[in-house]
Length: 438
Image (cartoon, rainbow, N blue to C red; front, side, top):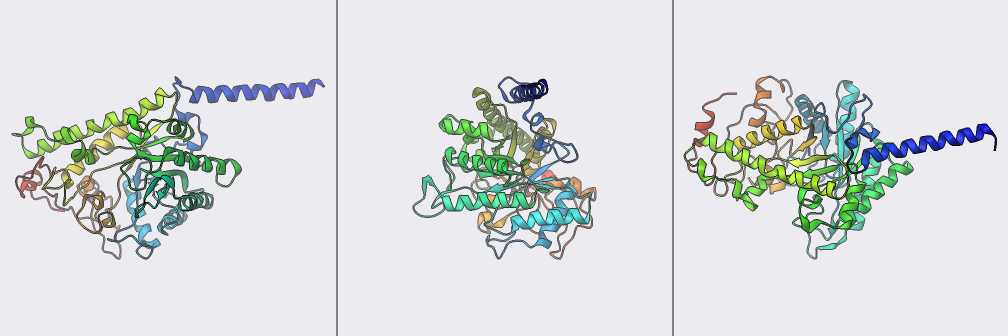
């Protein structure tokens, strides 16, 4: 062996040792460095991080506006472009979607982003692509949660690989499953199923079937990500090790019915309605913070260092059932504004990406009724900005963003906002809002 050959081998060995040390300092328990410091694929072409960056606000988006979600009802390219211009005006730069191949709008969203960027180089928007994962016979008779719907799931994953490869300038993340491990969902599967497809995607980026920079995660309820002991198992731990970051869902809104002791306080009974609402939303916000921390604690317990971002949180502005005026009186536009303001402040101060749920109301989610699931949007179906965005309306943020659907931005009436517990008066909105005109 000559000296030159020996020298080259020594250099290679030294580089290998340095690389191993770097990775160890990033990912082993106890490290003070964040995961994003060690993943160059978090870095955009402009040198900025995509996640945990307040310059890149995120939101959950679907263009569906009809009472039935079908291929025929899927929004057109023109419609999607109008939506994206509105979201861009808000400052949104990162979207989250939920399917890859079931409906055509996912690819239309990617194409619309690209075309808007080609028309305006200053337009900047990226996508976390969702691959819907489900069990055998999900949403049908004979549902079997112990077996996955293999054909469906593979099609969704392959669809994600295809779209990430065709739109590398837009797709930066693929999320395997949406609340697919929490046991109260009709489509839930075991963590082993999600882990299998996460590894499948990671192999695809290693072999070049999709861009090597594409991040891979799963997006699920905080409990199923380690927040509750009943979900703890080896497959979940390995899944958390394999994903690039954690995308956790936290919903104090739903807990107002299912775990709602925090929502109503006897101490507030004699306070004005607006103060009752403010206190209740503060309690709601504080109720869900420990859920986020429980996920982080489970990671630490298992020696896993990953960033934990918010895959979903939100508040419905309307409900005709248990969250409405005849129930917990949780759903109102006023409460939704207070919650939105609180979550925006917290995530901004803590440099967390939050895919707020959601951009526009989706009537199909409540079968066209006034059920809460169809009314989580910051905008109504016809494009009116709800009260959480009134400051932007007043500032002229959406000026000129009209459409053939006559989308306009008048300030809508808050519903019976601030009524905590049973609604006492259908006119309580007057106490809160006065007669504010657009």
